[in-house]
Length: 81
Image (tube, rainbow, N blue to C red; front, side, top):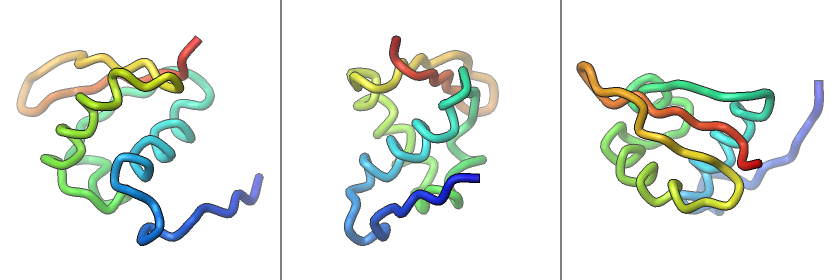
């Protein structure tokens, strides 16, 4: 188990916080999630996450895809190649 020291949430922007969370979770491959299920872990509302995911589509570190929509958008994220 690695111990990574991360800045407090006050020091990180919302976008940086979400990007760090997704990068860590997708480290071993692709990740599928709905915003409402990670909102508490990231400390953002599902609406904020959805808005930030659109911005993260242009990220150099992550590949982001709007994967499906049933009762809420499912996002697919994987590390950039």
